[in-house]
Figure (cartoon, rainbow, N blue to C red):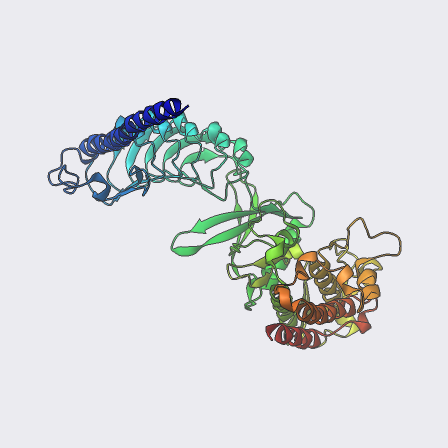
Length: 513
């Protein structure tokens, strides 16, 4: 037995001695492959221009060369970033040997020729930026082999051919920028199949058709994400579908309602566009500031495409959002010259910026009530033509009553109760005589924890569970009470916005202690 064990140990030691040098040799060989690939790339990129990339020599480790970044673990090239040169070179096929490359930027270095097919070997590539060169030929299909690619920026080159239909197979793609090339033909409808796509730019080509991908579709059109020259922040462009009944009227209403208004809790309108498209047909669009965190609807209900998680929207943040919307309504309803009734308050029309500050948007159904006579019968607007949204529409509108700010307060109350419970007013649990309003009213105050969103009652400190739950419970009851009071059936019983704001500030103060 002892002899057998000794033999095994001797054999294992020989295997280890053999294996370790082999692994080291393999790593060294792989690193040398990257070095040779870079040197070959340099020769083609710089086109023999003297003193180009002087650090790229044998006396310095290639991971320390200009524009080169290596991974810590394998010492393989993961980033290559070179820009703003006048070399006038080409892309060498050896580029495909940098198989650990994740980010490649070769912008504004006067490149010409075509993208080599070997680029398809870069399976780990996440971002490719070849902007502002003189590259030509068709965009190579081998890019579909780069299965990790998220960002593809080929703008300001001389690429020809059609916009490839195979882009739809690039399931990770978030950014596609092909502007200012010589592409022609029809924009492929298959682009709408790239569910991950967040930004696309095809301007300054010879293309026809429409970009099918949008951020969302509303009653009167679709919303697209875009950019403007000399404007750093992204924009949202609402393109009206003028074939939809009421779309043109919605355009006028929204431009009139938001055109002169300025408030931190209203979506800022940058401009309104009214022109004709390439077919000679009427074109109307509204350009807004882009809200990167999407809508409250997405956050509350974890809709596809939302980056937020429901559990991250803690009670204090929901109170902040409720306050933001209340401030917006207070501004709209109490202007001396022009009162605006939104007529469609709901979570999908509450948009969130990068700081999760809420902005009220989509004024396509808004109604204007002029001057100080807004409470008089002669200045009230008939609600018979108001569409609104089922579940949020005040009962008096359904009966043909006049449009007043009290209608917005009703919708706002339903919004608060939805934020509290996580349940839409059209949820399947509401039927016959049971509604979201009635459910919350029945459960106040003792049974409030039975109906609230479960993420709001998880204790944060184990040894202070009772204290934390009591504090939260009190605030939840107050929040629910506001929502119920705002969504009373009779308009005269509904709260005023100034009282809503005071009560929400009281909750905010309690939560901060």
